[in-house]
Image (tube, rainbow over all chains, first blue to last red; front, side, top):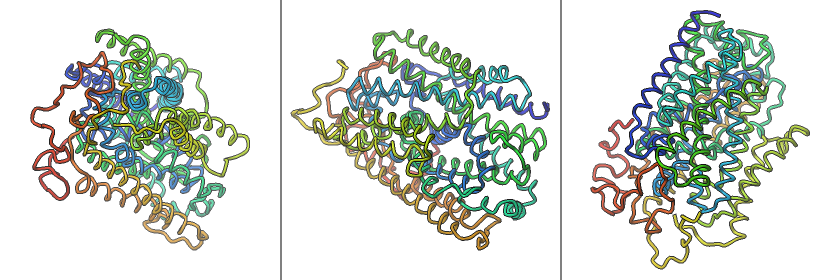
Length: 480
Length: 153
């Protein structure tokens, strides 16, 4: 395809590569390899913390799937997307300092370390590790497919070679650099997302002849596009509001977010991060989904939602600028993938291997195993992504919702309710995942239960299960 | 499992709860309250103004008024609130484990092989076991300008 588009993308890849490499050199031995590799030695400052949270959370669906849906559905989907602003402050405030203090007290490197210390139960730890490995593996594969498709559509390379380029660039820096490399590249990728969305929004508004003109075009085509109810008036307030759980407050149960709330170096870093995170999340989500809506009159007739953003960028911007803008969804995908890869690796190395296979491994063995597992995982995901499952946004949300329903209460109530115990946690996790899967298939067959997103009912059920499970067994307060 | 403390109950000498947790609990509730406020604002303007017939819509900066108030102003407002929170409301505190408030003599997690041995009994020599909510004279909370300037990224 166009060389002008490719040059900024190549520069981006090289820069990310370089940053990851430099970060890997910074790994000091001061806090021990595991803390360093999987948690960056708990040294993140406010800006990097905010950016790694936003970038990990903002994925292919925020940059390709979401705006694509906004293109089809109109302002109703932009309204829905803005439920995500809450993630910027909610996760950090609610887990907050108590979680930061306790994860230091328990010497926790992964979310499961915390659950283990809190519930003192191998069953909880094993079930959590299995849930993380299964669900995040599928989420990761979906993201890799997105990354490969994006490179394919931008470069005209075959899907396989596009995926290969993507896989190699991510794998190298994650494997050698660990969490610090992931967080630092996330910060750069987050900055690129902010700049990219702003440029593209301006480009689309100019191409559409200004916002009032675009609005007139939308009204002429279908007035429902400018209502909160969607093009065919199928978006009910209850359904849209239920996304407050899925992509809003429920995010507090996602392991990739939880692990970040134990990685900051000071309370001041956390304060800064929650302000920066809110601003950056809102800015990106607002811009991206407005771009999706505004793109409709500018470029009518796009069938595949995921192609809206790439096609619009190439249409309304000069090639080199389109290249910079299209680095943004690439950055979003990479920054999500790298975090998931490392998280799944930590679940295998720390929570399975070191806990149950070989607790007495030496530092050198731990190092070899960590690098090895991360690398091999990446290769497996690459091979799986070669035969891609189709619905990107679907798989991604499935993994999200399932993990949220599983972990939100064991984490949050485990932190704040001293009577919560392992029976409650187990009941909550099993109920959450089980009912999520059941209701998912029910909704597919009969339409949304109660008119809300799949995640809603399982989150409520898992809360009930947690409380009943905890109160039904020994009622002794836990001392933190 | 076997390396975990099993004797967490009926410990004879109860230790006081870490005073930092009180502040932490308060701040977690702030987070919940903020999310509730955010939701009400978002929902109220979106469906309050947006449920009118499209012919009666008004537009601000070209955007439908319901969207402008719910999502654009709502977002700007939340940004301002979080900045104010970060600068003036939330309390600075050390996050290191303070052995004085541990419920047990030793941390319940086993030392991981990759990390060096357990954290030393007293993490930093300069901070004995005084109540850690007040870490240093210059950084209590609120309105102290000197505690807000330091860049810490």
